[in-house]
Image (cartoon, rainbow, N blue to C red; front, side, top):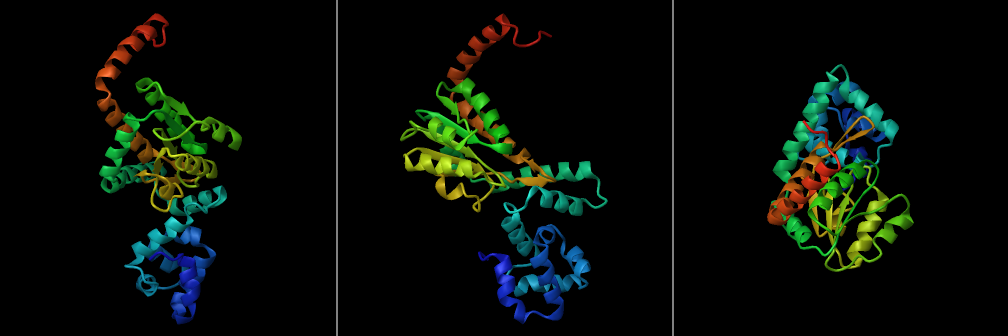
Length: 285
């Protein structure tokens, strides 16, 4: 179902039963909380049975309650303010063990990423990176940590890597001034998506560069402007973005690229080890 679920509810409210209207009213008023409730919990909240909630999902054209819930979560993930994130997380946690819930959620996101990742896009992205004339990497706000990590290791593998400065909009385009055919631009963005990253990727695509997105799904604004999209599941842990699965995907990308550059990389690190030892970069055991 591709329509916005809130629109679908408003259009069909006159066909709902009394119990279904209660569900509809709660979702319309508190969709941020409803998106993360089980069918049982949602039913208790509005005073109807779990089966009424499930029938409500079918009434809207979904395959079941989990399908409707995914639609809600996808719709709101980029809409929630920081305050709403905190409220939703507090509501999700309840009396559960916080440590176990957060770590188990991260484990689940890695598992889902592994199952859903397009292997062909991954291999083609690796090919493009290895053969690129120049590699640009952009990620801002929380995604800056992943972009910086990727740049650190790519800079040890390649001579032609640029971490796009994104302090201001003008700096982004100044960094991409000479981008064009033969170049690769890697954009990293997860909800709430950065408009600066989206504009930079769109600019690079229009200049003929190969655009590679590291993002969370087809609903991402990076998806339609990227030649290759590498998807990793993300989530929110309160106001914090959980980026464990995206970082794991980046690790796999680094290993795949390094294998293609194995001989050159060995020579590079022999040189680096000498420099690190000479200048005491690392403490000796």
